[in-house]
Image: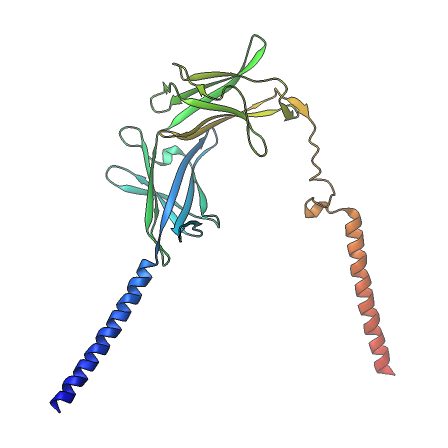
Length: 290
């Protein structure tokens, strides 16, 4: 009898340990399945327009980078003694989001006039929590068109805003905005001089709608200042006629610009179908009365 009780106790203990181990393994496996979200944050400033962060969220799953969509990201201003929430944003289907700063006055720099920001993800059932820090200083580009010896130039000056001091030996790109990719003008590398200034000639014969050129001066992906851009509208191009037929009544136009013959044909088909239906209904009533 005693041996039977010991056997039963051993059997129950074995089953309990097995169930507990299986449950623990399942919970551990679910925890392991969570992947880490990786965040990429870039700072952009367009002079006299807006400043914003371009955020990209992705995860390394099965040795491939996969976009992480529809997750909420919290943006903080990281100060020496506290973190202040600035706002939140949600990634789109490509795992991207653009968080616009209403003004740089909405955030505060540290004692070195450096803005320290943190983009944070709290985690969910699929992904672990994650965060990404970014630091930058405020830079200003002042650009204008000048004429010298009958030639047109872009003159641009780059300064550090907080100190109002020239930024020397920095590369500025000068380009004309285009639909697909910008047209670079000037040298490949335009370095600022001791006054933080570049002078780039504007070539003749550049086409522009109604003769207008949209010229951009860009400090691109700088480690200290991010990407800063100044935009100038200059009537210095060769006038071209906009031959786009998008707003005309063409097959590829918007719905309100549908070609007339398609509207007439479609309406005639609808009227004909309703006519046949009404004719059949009338005949059914006639047959019913016979």
